Image (cartoon, rainbow over all chains, first blue to last red; front, side, top):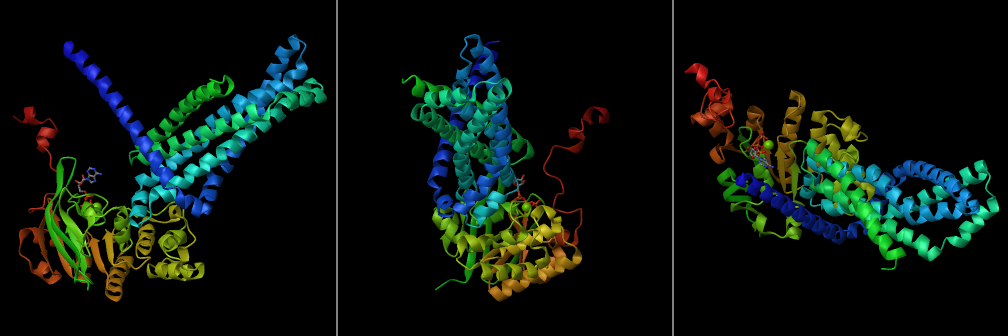
Length: 264
Length: 270
Ligand SMILES: Nc1ncnc2c1ncn2[C@@H]1O[C@H](COP(=O)(O)OP(=O)(O)OP(=O)(O)O)[C@@H](O)[C@H]1O
Ligand SMILES: [Mg+2]
């Protein structure tokens, strides 16, 4: 009985140590990627190639989801605002929720499951099939040649994807409220224009999406590079990428929001 | 002044976790020599190549490559000597996101400033040597196993290295490609003056092309000699290997407890 208790406590302890050790490992890997990013910028073609796989191929899901999220926001917002007779504020509501929160957060969540998982799986498979070792044996550093371009491609795409998501969302809100429900088109746009502040809302949303981009791609490349070189290893790493980066996005969002909009 | 010896392995020990894989290996490889390393599956041949390439660190002893101790080099030093090495991986390890052409061109683009037109000629020459010039536009996923290994071979000799390590270049090849690749390796070794190490199970083919043979068993060098010495050898180990006999000093099985014990037959048998 006592033995069991002792062993379960030591189990918890060793798990905690493992977790912290891995976190340290990830942090070191992140620094390594930054240090070895020189090649990515000298040969920007490498990044552009990855931008296509990471960014352009994520466009469809971002555009479609943005449209639907905006349409739902429009419907829900109208229903509520109409009770107080301020349905002309629906444009403001849609735009502010998108630019400040939903754009960066939802697009980052989608990005993690669309592009993050793909990055992890690709790097993990390259490792499992010895492609990374082979590259190292050819005196080409896999971190600067394979990992860093993917990392920067993710970091660069994320803010653009978030912006596109927000734009599509606003358009979706416009479609539902102005075209279908019949809210006055002039007040929809003018209220939005006067209540959305460039610095407070748009810049802060942009900063958020930059943080999310770094977090998601850093997690994705680390999990791929660190995955055990087997089929189960790669599939486990892919799952961890999606779970960890989703949690990281939501946690970071809370912290960033607290700093930005509460002025802590 | 360069010495005659390109690779010197001295009292090399290596273990994965606590399990010793190599125990006190000594080898000398001269420039221009073609050396075969043979030994049972799991005897540590691939591991030995990884030690020469500096991918893993020995627990004792050293590997010297042109008078530099490989595991004592820093990263830049290691990359410097790796540019003079080529390695054919046991499973090919082609870059799956690049075409056959780009795979072979990879090192030329990374390490040289050659114009694209010259790279094109060089790549096609290398591919022609392995009989796959016509396949340059294919992706690795569209190749058969044997074709993939030949592309990997073309890629590993892309920069005419000083030391070539071929990890089982003959597996998965039909008899015709096998002898073509065998004589290609011999010819490259002679014309470029490079040193080649081939790890192989193909005793007859390799005895006909190599200059020297090492047999690795159980982590030590069980026998070594020139092909004619090996053919003549009466040492039971070498004889068993060269003639492919099941009974002899080389065990077929990975170490395990006794078979009846593993199958839980003890009780019924007693
Ligand atoms: N990454 C690893 N971790 C632990 N043990 C390993 C690892 N890689 C190889 N081994 C062990 O090291 C031993 C030697 O492996 P190695 O790949 O060098 O054999 P080999 O002689 O090349 O065999 P084969 O002819 O089948 O390719 C094997 O017993 C294997 O179990
Ligand atoms: Mg092997």
